[in-house]
Image 1 (tube, rainbow, N blue to C red):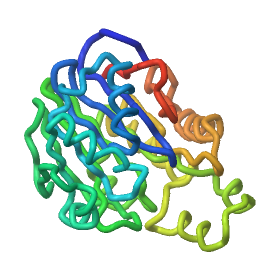
Image 2 (spheres, rainbow, N blue to C red; image 1 turned 30 degrees about the horizontal axis):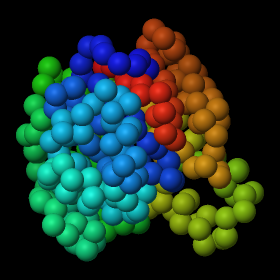
Image 3 (cartoon, rainbow, N blue to C red; image 1 turned 90 degrees about the vertical axis):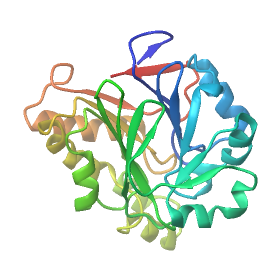
Image 4 (tube, helix red, strand yellow; image 1 turned 180 degrees about the horizontal axis):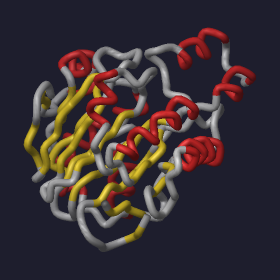
Length: 267
């Protein structure tokens, strides 16, 4: 990751994990916010550390209505006059959280901030969660899929062929099974509408690489049931075990809990 200026487009991973999620994709002058899971003040500060004026945000795309993805959306959207886009089910679930905010149902392709957004369905225990496939103005393909319990055919279809993929690597199964969470919560996380484990994520990465993905960012790591080193090791083992070479065939990163240094990923 690099700080400050550079070639565009950028991805700025602002926040990731159970305490809040948000990403900025675009240029210095125009872009999109993917989720807004921290306070408006924190979102503003994180964008500014990345060299982005919050007024550059032309739309907020929401994956689903859980608080770690929408905590700051109402205040941030109202403050800067930004429209919010989400599935119909998510907008209905968020209704009281979007008072006074311009909102739009995201069903088909959306042209915004010089990019084309294609939403797709993800399996999660929420009203109607989405992932996003985004084509930048110069034709680069990006995809984001977090908070998903399984890699369905729909998810695979929309991730394959993207040059840059942000994908969930939420938990280490052994840490989860042996950890302090109550049984019902462990079952929820391990379910097909829960969260993707390190192993499940890692097993899919070689297929993505063979389809053209060059950059991987592991995201939404559990604070209690995972570590960045475990997630990275699982991913590297899978990719290198498939005969791929780090630095030559792929770049691999882990999204920070909070991007305190204002670093952006160029792609």
